[in-house]
Length: 123
Image 1 (tube, rainbow, N blue to C red):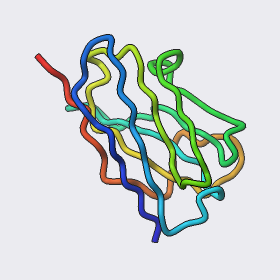
Image 2: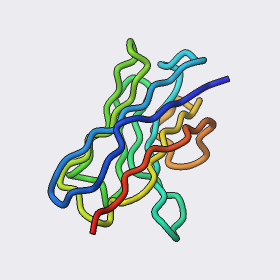
Image 3: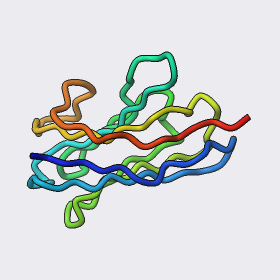
C-alpha cells in the first residue's frame, strides 16, 4: 500500500557531497516517521538517520552525525538525506523507510521500505 522510491544515488567521491531523495505515495505522509538505512557489502543493514513526523525530532547514527542531515517536506511527500564529507565507509545501498509510530524517532522496526539506491565506491 505504501510505496517508497529512492533517487539521487551516485558514486562516492572522498570529501564530496551527495543528496538522496525519497518520494512516498499511498499514505498520509505526515503520519509517518521516516528513516534512512544502509547496507554495505558483507555487512548488516544499519540505521543512518531518522526524522519524526513533523521534523521536531531527528536521530543520527554516530557515523552520520555532523556529516549527514535528514529533512522532510510533508507537502511534497518527500524525505531527503544530505550527505557531506563522504568517505569510502559510506559506500552502501541506501534504503528509505517509513514507520507508523509517531513518538520519537525509531531506529528499528520500520513498516515499509523502498528498493534502495546505489551509492557505490570508486577505486
